[in-house]
Length: 157
Image 1 (tube, rainbow, N blue to C red):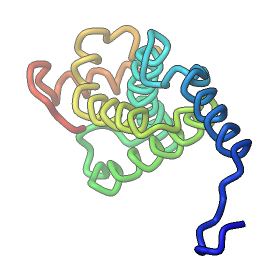
Image 2: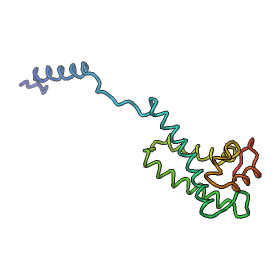
Image 3: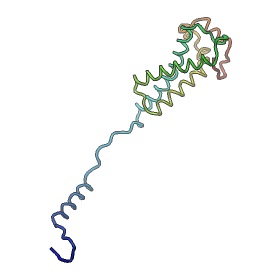
Image 4: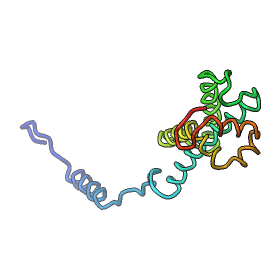
């Protein structure tokens, strides 16, 4: 040992450190999972989330009509009924979110956009496909929606 206070470094230790650093430099990066944001399945999942948003609003209006009998344009239809529609749609959306595993923020956004799109454009679909909506709701309900709404404008009913 040296009396000058400096410590000696074991040459085998230095060689070992050099070998470890060299092996780290040569080692390939570990394979990484493909990010969820890529691929056709991701795009389809966003489209599915949008579709779920559309369907839950239709289902909420279906439930409201068949449970309460409230017709579009009636005095009973108020903002509280629209809040009820969105509440039912939200609950149905949460249930479907658990089923389809829509947990990412993009899926929640797509579902919310679908809900708003359905809320403001469902009357356009009623004008375009009255026969289908007569099967779901009733002939009187469809005639009421067609009488009250303009198929070229956005509307809440």
